[in-house]
Image (tube, rainbow, N blue to C red; front, side, top):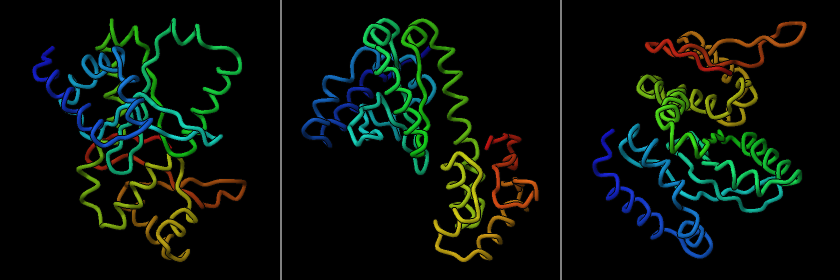
Length: 229
């Protein structure tokens, strides 16, 4: 594997983020970005991506209690929001009790509900089986990025609705479109029907009446990729 340029790029990556931060956010980056996090970048991220564009180390988010939580990394290109964690078995298990375990699960569920995708990698895999991690990371990123060149072919409003549908990570409803884009019900229906006609969305009938009030992501044209709702 060619890691040419990694050390210089990594040093510049951290330097730029340190320059932008003050107080606890800066201190967290200085002490929190350690061996495991750098190894993830070196063994997994860099060989796959070759840059750190859109990536934020020690990214602060709030949990359901309003308390700060720092994720190892956040990947934030445009509307996609993905959090990455590198977890060591011994440290993770040794520091875990039932309450901490519950809080961790609740935090991850809350973040999912807030529109983040949370992806965790085991330190042992990052260190000893990085090719597996790269394969899994490629699968995660492919869901979002493989459609990007094709999204640009859509009308501006269609493009934004489609991106919003991916961001929601659930079937998009008429009310979602109406509220997000400040349009009436009839206009929302027209927009969604147009995306269905283009093959980007498909109706998702609900209830005994099978009435269509929501739409799922469908096969992306020219890619054959299926986006699960």
